[in-house]
Structure formats: structure tokens, C-alpha cells
Length: 495
Ligand code: NDP
Figure (cartoon, rainbow, N blue to C red):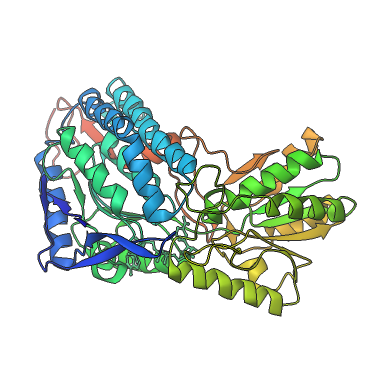
């Protein structure tokens, strides 16, 4: 059985304490690899290596164009090993193979995109600022932020890591990556590809391990300049507390309970297609999943019925089987959490329209039917809390104003979607949704060029796009006084 390694200071290595934990295939419930269980001592070695690499200038001192060359080699490495990584991601996470292939392609493109921005950085002149006093010349300069501690989740194991690794490297930062213990495998391949691309030792480091034993020491490490986190609100709070005690920069990409507003004038088939994509793509293990659907009352019964038929026609099975559109839930823990949420939904008085149970014929593996609740009390936890699984709640509304009120009545504000043939209405609703991402007449398409992140408890900061690059810089002002002048405050001389 394959045993993974840590990657610290340019070398693949075992954890100091030597421990491992199993990687479990959620379709079979069987272990298929042993993952290196890094701990505080390994995190410390990795952070110190990243610190040395950063402070020496071996990476931050290179031109953006040279760094871009490395990034493009990493992108090519991902493309060269796409089939292998996608198959590994299916085994580790359970997602259908075409979705995993999509993720790896996106990861490669993310490196190419940030390579372009790194190159452009070379021709970006220092900004000169007129401070209203001719004796001073003031400039604003951007410098890489330093050592980044990146902590990532299991829903897009490779892609969520790359959303941090690519812009941080492009900007000249160095990193320690701690992926989720539930899905760590593809990050080891990423480390191999980065190693083969010839980055100097210490620039990128990988420490797999559990949240408490590896994640928390990384969050607490005093030599990190920034913490970049994606995951749950509860863990995000711990990471933010750690950042607060060390006064470190922190970026949080947390959960959501995103609304999808469907108006009666839209095409019902298109609405159903995007509702399905918005909640069953990647098994609903998506922070931006549109898990609360609000439907204009005149369309509500017809849409619910069509949605039920379409959901029941989805092929469920292991992610590597052809035609499967819904794989197993990622882990036993997450499976049980979703089943508990479904039970609480039924107990709340919501109407279970479809699913809610294991499909017949799949006795092993964390399989669950696509699940639809309707007429959900808005105080119920299934309406308010993130489930992170293939469970959608559908409720009716009467007016645009009511739809917006229900949509915005959430602690989260990551994403939202609106569907209507009236594009003016769509634009109006889009502007009034309190969310960082709004889709019109679709749900979920994500572009590397656009900023990603949420309002309210959905997080702090933005990834992707130019904003995701700027997030890895410090701003410095350099103010120069003309040596021919004298200040003349304490000393009269000079003239
Ligand atoms: P977590 O937030 O616990 O995990 C995210 C990352 O944080 C993982 O790498 C995890 O490691 C790590 N971590 C855990 N504890 C600590 C700690 N004390 N200090 C530093 N890092 C830590 O999410 P879960 O995997 O437990 O999922 C729980 C719920 O979170 C889901 O049901 C879903 O609602 C939400 N979630 C949201 C995501 C998003 O994209 N917004 C992604 C994943 C989950 P490890 O996995 O090894 O414990």
C-alpha cells in the first residue's frame, strides 16, 4: 500500500514521529493508502524552511518572469499527470471522474493565469505619489507578503490548495500547505510536480496530518506572516483566533447557505438543470452550493414535481463508473452528519419530497440519494445551516421583495443565484443580494479570472482573479527627502 511522504525544504521525508493514518475510498469504505501524519515538529521544520527560503530572496528576489516560468512548468506537470491525479481524486474524495478531470484542468489553468500576472508585475512601475511638498519624492511599492500557512479542505482537495499555492508563489511568497486529513493524496502529487519544476528548497512545503496535530500548530506558528484557510466556520474561528494572537494577516473562505431565486417567467427545464447543478455537482460538497431554492408560487408545484423526477433519474455510483453523476459522500463522518441533518429536517416539519436515504443496490459506500425538502420552516436548521451534501430545500415566495428578504435572511453571504427571463429584474436582484458571488440564469460556473469570497460569516478576503494575487502582497511606502534641503526644526543650519 502506498505510504505518502511530507515535503519539507526540498526533500520528501517521513514525519519525525513516524505515524500514518489511512486514506479511505468512500465508494468501498476500504483503505487504499497510508498518509503521513505530520505533527508540530514537522510543521516547525517546514515553517522554518519556508522562512529561510523567503528571507534569503531565492524566490522573492527573482523577477516575476522567472517565477512565471516555474509556474508554467507546474501547470504542464499537472496536465501531464491529469489522468493519474483525477483517478486518485476520485478514489480519495468519491467525486465522478469527469468532475475530477475538470478540477485538475482548472488547477493547471490557475497556475498559467497567475504566471501571466507574475510576468505583468515586472513591467508594473512603482507608483509615485505627489505629497504636495516638492522636497519629498514618495513611492508605493508592493512586496511579497512572506511565509504563508495554507490550510485546505477535502471537497476540492487539489483545487482549493492550488487557489492558494499558485497566487502565493506568483507573488513571491513561500508556503506550508496542510491539506485535510480526509483527502490528502493529490497534494502529494502536487508536491512531486513542484519538486520536478525545480523550485528552490523551502519555497513550497507540504505537511499532511490532522487538524489538531498539524493544522493548529501551523495556525499558531509565529514565523508565518499570513494564514489562508478554507473550511468550516468553527475551524475558521480557531484560525482567526490564532492569527489574532500573533497579529497575522488572515484570509478565510468559509461556508454558505446560498439562495437560488427562481421567477415564474423562466424556462422550467433550464431552471431545473441549474438547480440540479447548483446542489448535486460535487455531491453538494461545495461551499457555494445553492442549497436554498426560492420559487415564485405560481411555478412552485410544477417545478417541484419536475425537480423530483429529474433528481430521481440521476445515476448514483462509484465515481469511476461511466455515467455516474453522483458519487459517495466523502467520509463516514460527513455521511452521518448529513443523515442527521435530514432527520432534523423531517422532525422540523419540512416535507421530504425525494431521497433522504441510501439508494437500493448500493449496500456499501457512503451513498445517498439526491434529497429534496419542500415547505421548510425558515427557523429550521436545514434552512439555516450548511449541510455540505446533496440536500436541497425549496420554498415558495410571492413577491420579489419577499424573495430577497428570505434570501438575505442568513448568517452566510457567499453566493446567490437568480433566474428569470426579465434581465432587468435579474440585475436588480443581483445587486440586492448580500453575497460575494451572484449568478444570473445559472449557478456555480466559476472562473479563475473573477474574485471568489463571501460577505458575513462566509469569510474574509477574496481568492482568484487579481484580488487573489493582491492578497499575497504587502504595501510599502518609500519617502525620500531631498538631500540638498535641510529640515530646520532643531538645527537652524543648512543654508
Ligand atoms: P474543517 O473546517 O474542520 O477543515 C478544514 C481544514 O482545517 C482541514 O485541513 C482540517 O484538517 C483543518 N483543521 C481542523 N481543525 C483545525 C485546527 N484546530 N486548526 C487548524 N486547522 C484545522 O472542515 P471539516 O472537514 O471538518 O468539515 C466540516 C464542515 O465544514 C463541513 O460539513 C462543511 O459544512 C464545512 N466545510 C466547508 C468548506 C468550504 O469550502 N467552505 C470545505 C470543507 C468543509 P482535518 O481535515 O485534517 O481535520
